[in-house]
Length: 216
Figure 1 (cartoon, rainbow, N blue to C red):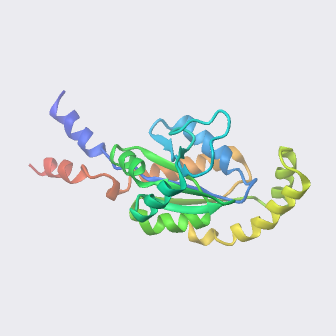
Figure 2 (cartoon, one colour):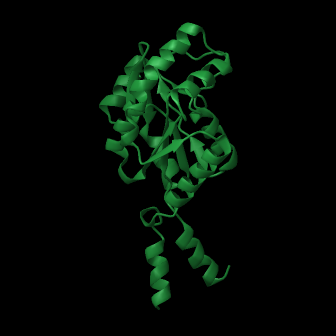
């Protein structure tokens, strides 16, 4: 391998980033996340730890890290979690170790968490964090999408609509806001955000050494 190729590889070596995507249910976040994971080999999905029992077909370490309540409390006490919350009497949290290892390896980690989890990550992740909030084009369109999915009862749809206003009120806490009126256009914007954030100087530790070679 030539010296020029080696120095170019050094320049392009980068630290991964933590990409958080939040939105009210029905805005398109899950679809966008799946598209991103399918197209980006350098991106992995964050795997949460939880105290709930595994559901049929779920695998430990792939879908969740299934842990006992006592172990989860130890993880909190030992600062092993980047964020954590209680949902329907079960605890959920993001283990710090696997995420930090992925970032060090140059992998990007995708998070599907709400605004509360994002606030906790902002305190613990620092410059590694990139926050994207996905908005629907209108409240009427949001409700229409929820109904078209035909996955939820009328009661659940109304509950999700009631929660949407609270969730949307946190939009200003995010670095980027996408209005998902057209899925393909929104996805293109999301890819642009990802590519730009990957090129930030602070995420490319090899640049200093590369620049020194240019001065010799």
